[in-house]
Amino acid sequence: MSQIFQRSQTLAALLPPLLLEAERVAAAVHLGIHGRRRSGSGDSFWQFRRYAAGDSAQRIDWRQSARSDKLFIREREWEAAQSAYLWADTSGSMHYASQKDRPTKAERAQVLMLALASLLLRGGEKVIWLGATPLAVHSKAGLERIVAQIDFAEQGESLPPATPLAKHAHMILCSDFLMSPAALDDFMRRHTAFHARGVFLHILDPAEEDLPFAGRIEMLGCENEAPLLLPNAASLRNVYRARMQEHKERLMHVAESAGWFYLRHVTDTPPHLVLLQLFQHLAADIRGL
Image (cartoon, rainbow, N blue to C red; front, side, top):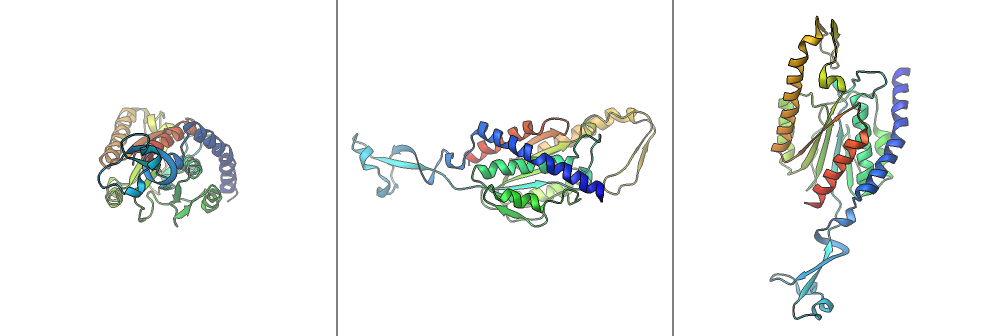
């Protein structure tokens, strides 16, 4: 129990600096819900456009129209918050790290999703943290409620619980995606029916990329699998790499088929790099709705 507590305390200590870095990323990317750059029911002026058949006469800007012989409509920016559903996989396979000084995949997934939540809340979006009980928050203050709900040592499910999605929602799945292909396919069928857009954020430990082991190795399962004895681990490296590449390509295919986006992150690389990619993608995707 003391070891679990120490690991949870160590992870908790990582959160403030990473969230501070997330704020720096937010300042660089300039995402703001009040800058949608598309017509809607906000308060901020966007542009004038020519009056067209079917437009309400109440929307005519008579001052602008008086400057020419044409009628003009004053359009305002869209300012409706979008809903982002965030999932950090904490299943058994995610609690793996090939070195003691390296974060587990679960730790990195949780930190990345918390940092993303911070960025989205800063931009005025609504965040739904997909835990055992989904938690919706609307402001930066809600981030503390999300952190309070997380059990950093918990081993949970590979996929989030079935949740009705809001219109134009975005779902971000942060996982190693080592669930059965059938389970992932079924999940995607159910959620694409809501016309949700989303991202697969594929988390890998560097040892899972290359299988760098050599000699006689006993592999211990993370999810109650029987131990596997490899007489010569190096002899399996090429076969393993081919299977891992197939896994990545299948994930890319599943994501692209649903109109989703695929990103990969390895835990020996800085988390802010993939966070920036993810954030920039979501910012562009939200603006393009």
